[in-house]
Length: 336
Ligand code: AHM
Ligand code: MG
Image (tube, rainbow, N blue to C red; front, side, top):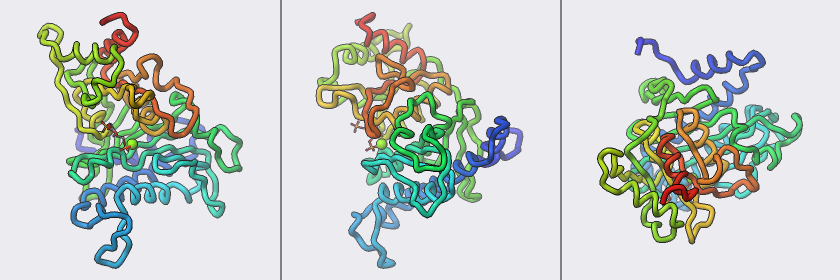
């Protein structure tokens, strides 16, 4: 690097300046998300110490009711986003219905969908978790509360998507459709610093990530693909390596940097897969496409799927372009 430190705020301001009609509101919104991410990161890092892992009914040493980290993350995201006049409605994995902006606060033009703490079943074992977010412009008229319709836009309408990974360091990775950029939280400054400009996913990877315990429940095409990637054939770089953390943010982040494919297929027990279109598949798909990769349901580009409901699930395959295209050949029956 040149020695010049580029903070997330500066990067976003410079991105926003490329749009002549920009008002600075988007920068403010992203700063709110980054602030929430720092709070969640701080609490994730000291999870074992501060008893935040306790049940919601626990009382901590200050006599306060202890919140589980997923509840804390949800409240932190909502509190960071509901009062600054940038958003008109939100939706989260943690809330069944859309999250309106309280009447006492001004309404904005953005719609934010998020998964406040993805991979939360991993927290107790100190395994990486993450926050995922997806931003749209509202489609309902300004000046009124946003509606479910605003939250049910196709992924290709996203104006920004990102994730924060709380791992060996905390990183925020985002795209506004102009490449993918990664920022590492410097704990001494408390700032996200540009560390991974213009991330590109390798065209072909060595890693496949899937919960293989579901093998017997999958469709034959997916079984065939997984069988194929495990065969020994050095000229085609097989066998691929299996890596599965069980936190999508961590699995996708690793594959983005190293190359590979992430799969959460449909199965007999989960006919639409497990992952949610609005705040898991779409934002990750936007990021992966912007990094030069692909994201599909197996039959359709993820970003083209018309959402029918907030918590809708989709089969998800995403990663390096050539790996996903090969998978598509298996799904279409071209290869067996
Ligand atoms: P969550 O949002 O409830 O944490 O669930 C989503 C997580 C993803 O992070 C991960 O890819 C997947 O669930 C793992 O599921 P499984 O345990 O079935 O492999
Ligand atoms: Mg999740």
